[in-house]
Amino acid sequence: MVTNQSVNDWVKEMAEMTNPDEIVWIDGSEKQLDLIKQIALETGEMLELNQEKLPGCLYYRTNPKDVARDEKRTVICTSRREDAGPTNNWVSPDEMYAKMRKLFKDSMKGRTMYAIPFSMGVVGTEFAKIGIELTDSIYVVLSMAIMTRVGQEVIEQLNHGADFTKCLHSKAQINEQEKYIAHFPEDNTIWSINSAYGGNVLLGKKCLALRIGSYLGKQEGWMAEHMLILKIENEAGESKYVCGAFPSACGKTNLAMLTPPDYFKKKGYKISTVGDDIAWLRIGKDGRLYAVNPENGFFGVAPGTNQKSNPNALQTTKKGTIFTNVARNLDDNTVWWEKLDKNPPENGEDWLGNPWNGKTSSEKGAHPNSRFTAPAENCPTIADEFFTGEGVPISAIIFGGRRAKAEPLVYEAKDWNHGVFIGSAMASETTAAANGQVGVVRHDPMAMLPFCGYNMAEYFQHWIDMGKKMTNPPRIFHVNWFRTDENDEFLWPGFGDNLRVILWMLHRCKGTVGAVETPLGYEPKPEDIDVEELNITPETLEKLLRVDKDAWKHEIQDIENFYSKFEQLPKELTDSLEELKQGIDKL
Ligand code: GTP
Ligand code: SPV
Ligand code: MN
Image 1 (cartoon, helix red, strand yellow):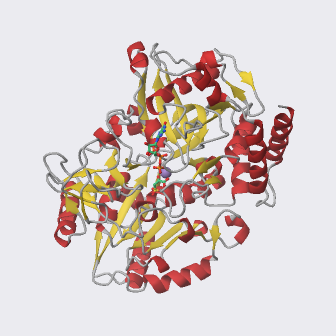
Image 2: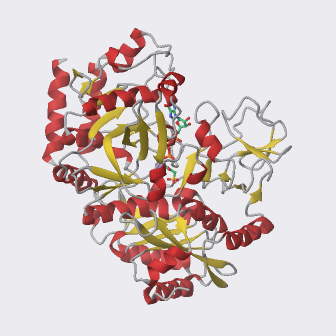
């Protein structure tokens, strides 16, 4: 029972507005979740999959126009426009509340309002933050129960007076004209309506853990980042941890769960997964940066996931998982997506629910942004540290993008501030993770363009300030697994072989390997990337590492254009840009 008066007052006020038939508090018990699941199966909102092959797994389909994050409908509502900054959509809080109150009026009529108490981070740890999501969607209830820590323990925290983020969601009529994902950082409040797609409705994830989180982090002196967290154990049994910020659908889940090439496995290298999408970072007493994964599950891209590319992710989805917008095999009631295997169903149903023969159809069976929602504890490589919720010390931060040209395989920043510049200047080809055109290069600083809850110039300043507070900051690197040759083929094998690049980074951190200075930063000497048992020619490696003068002249112009959006940028960044320009001119 919730005894916290401010919680009860708020729930009452939201219920008066949305007018549900009843309110059900989620206690997190299996029994209750099972009952709720039965309702979704009876109404057809969700489908049960083959319970022998995929125990506890469900299938869910969204409206065909509601299959990805919607950045145009995502708004930051601060009193002052400049506090949202030039990269966010801004509406004043008064105007947005007024507009949305009308949409939420009676939006839950005839339905149940579920109240989901959840914690981002292990309940009660230093890093953890609490939220309550009110929703009329069973899909949201079951997904939040996978993605976050839900239930009684959180209610106890609330009853002890813990602060919480007020999250309200209604699927309403799924009307794309009236879809809004609105953030009110000054009120610690999130309102989302007329969507049912994960990133727009699982409000603990991008909305709380990144947009509200980044705003709180700025005020409280920590960071909320779109980053994976990876643990690497070497032959000697030493453990190191790295974080990586890549834009949506650019390889975080895959890097976080990577399988070392046999050669490294035999030598005794071991990889574990701490997080695949979000990292919360704090400075420890020893002056190092520590990271936790505030989530409790993975909301991962399905297409491309297979036994070879990411066996750990595949294994993770074998039980207790919700699949969204993938194809179905009607013969055995299982799921399928592009590149899962070479055996698509003949008697299938595509993500739209139409009959689909994967052997003969030229149409895709799964939506390119179809996803799995799977418990982290299913992951064969999940790290012990994930469960303690205590931070792991970060040796390196990796920025990366999906870039066919210009960006080399890897380079290292000269120092923290130069690394912040590299992050601020990042660009990547857009993907199906957000509505809009795919494959267009756009600036996506620190992979946070869609997720920074305040003015991005201040966010850059926050990065620089955090650097000043650390006596032993992580080294910063930039990678690109996606550089292509003249035939548009990837030059680098990627996936498990990315470990080879990470090991170079760890050698740099230790000081056991040299480097070549370029205008971009320090690049590896080709012989320092261990390509043992990898079929790659010295020419290909040279192409991967090449700094192309003409391409970089264009890059610099693009960075200048992007920077011109901001009224005031930290001088450290504009100085680094000037230095880069001079370096490239001299090539
Ligand atoms: P979000 O969940 O949207 O934040 O994405 P993510 O960064 O976790 O991306 P994910 O790991 O799911 O990868 C997205 C796509 O990139 C998948 O189709 C992968 O198969 C592909 N991919 C991942 N790593 C590599 C790589 O090293 N090389 C190549 N060529 N493709 C990769
Ligand atoms: C992303 O788009 O970066 C995701 C999926 O990780 S979502 O949760 O929808 O944002
Ligand atoms: Mn993401």
